Amino acid sequence: MKSVPYPDSLLPLVLARLWLSGPTARHWLGHRGRDGVEFTTSFDLNRTAEPARAVAAGIERLRTAALVPWSVIAEAGRSEHGCFTWDGRQLQAIAAYSEALGRYCSLMATSGAPTLLLAGFPMHRIKNIEPWADTAAKLRTLRPIRGTVLDTCTGLGYSAIRAARHAEKVITVELDPTVLELAALNPWSLELFHDPRIEQVVGDVAEWISSVPDESFERIMHDPPSVELAGELYGERFYRELFRVLRRGGRLFHYTGDPHSQHGRRVVRGVVRRLQEAGFRRIRVDGRAHGVVAWK
Image (cartoon, rainbow, N blue to C red; front, side, top):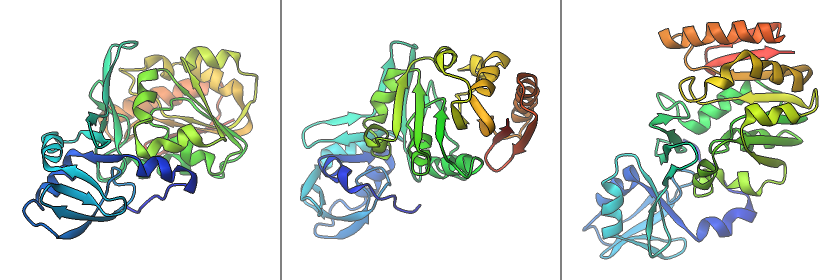
């Protein structure tokens, strides 16, 4: 996993807080009793790596002289994949219950960027790939990314952030305010709230899209939760709206899950059929990105 540097404007925000995960905490605990030993680790959930030192009281971040006590590290280490923030006084789990949708949301540590868990379902691929690379694979299907991009389901904002590096503007829509509250605590999501090319919409994309003028977008990233959690985002009615707001010659990527798995094949067959009925004529299954690409 390569480091992903922050824009200079975000460094003060990053240095003011520490992040740790269950796996990182257990790694740190392995240095307990080795006072004075320096090693390289991450204080921001694997986004960057920097030097640290084991001392009698805990782990010291050499860059800022901040200290994480052993008691805090042990508490975080009891979580298998949980993610936490530490402000010098309180260890806070990056997790919350969504009153609006009646489901539990949390950040889950991986070998790279964290993923979002919704009702226990990870919102990125995590088998043989980590979420930041998963996002890159999906966006690769839309290259060249240009003009105005629609990201139908914000989540942690990885798609919006990466698309904004090339697009003139990205409009990203998130149904659940609780998810955005968690994203605001995720170091990998900071640009979502600070990049002027990203416009956030909080609401139901299936309803919001009806107010969007025809042919407003050159690219659409449609990466919805599973059919079980968001069946309306797999329906022909919504696909017709996506077709309407996409410019002629524009392109859509629709995440479906592994098209080679038994469940994925069923989902892909239904998605392709409904996209065709909605007006898309050229549709290609992309096994590497786990989805389908459709042109208008």
